[in-house]
Length: 343
Image (cartoon, rainbow, N blue to C red; front, side):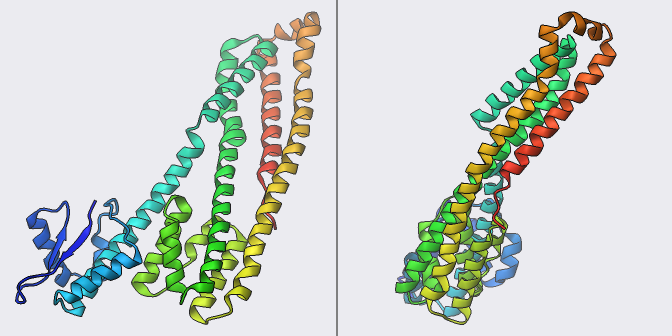
C-alpha cells in the first residue's frame, strides 16, 4: 500500500524529499527521475493496474501540495507529482471496476440458495423423469442440464436483480446527497469531492470516485459510467449535473424533479416486481398441473402405463419432449417476472 508523505528539506539546495512507504532506495530514485522524464499520459500506459493506493481526501491533498510548495519545490514539479498520483488513482479505479464486476457475478452465483436451488431442481427432475420412464440413468443425465437452466433463471437472475435494486437505491441516496450538498457547496468539484469521500464501497462508490478522479485530473465531468446501470432517471440526473457544471443553474430546479423521478421509478419497479411475482405463482401452478398428468397416469393407471414402459425408446422420447416443454414454459414466464423496467 503506497502512501505519499512529504518532508520539508533542511537544505535549500536539495530537492524536497518524496518518501513513499514500501519502496526501496533504488525504486525511490527511479520514481524521482520519472517525475521529470514521464508525462501524465505515458504514466497511464505504464501503471500497474492492480497496485493499491490510499485515496486521500481533498483536505489531505491540499495540505500535501502546500507542504511541497513550502519546501521550495517548483510549481511545475508539484504539478507533475499530482498528475502522477491522480493517474495512479484513476487506473486503480478502473481496476476496481473490473473487480466489482467479478464480485457481483460471484455474489449472485456462489450463494447458498444457488446450491440449494440446484439440488432441489435436480432431485425433482430426476424423480419426475425416473417415475415416468423407469430409467434412472436417463433421468440423472437429462436432469443435469434441466436443473442448470432452471437454477440460472430462478435463482441466479433473481440474485442479480436483487443486487441491481440495491444499487439503484444507493444511486437514489447519492442523488439526494448531491442535491443537498449543491445548496451549500461553492461548485461542482467541491460537491463531487464530498460525495466521493462518503461513498467509497461497491460499484456505486467506485463509479463516484472514478468521476471525481477524472474531474480532478482533466477538469472534465465524465458521467458515462452511470449509463451502465441502464436506469434512465439517473442518466437524466447526471446530464443535469453536467449542465450545472458547464453552464450553471438553479440547483433546486435542476435536481429536485430528476431526484423525484428516480424515487418514483424505484417505487414503481418494486410494485411491478411484487405484482409479477404473484402472477408468476399462478402461472407456475398451471404449468405444474399440466406437467403432472404423466405422473397421475403412472401412479393411478399403472397397468395402462406399463404398456408404454414396455417401449423404452418411445417413452424416453415422449417424456423428454414433455420435460423440455415444461422447462421452456417455466423459464419463459420467469423471464417476464424479471422484466421490471419502467418504460
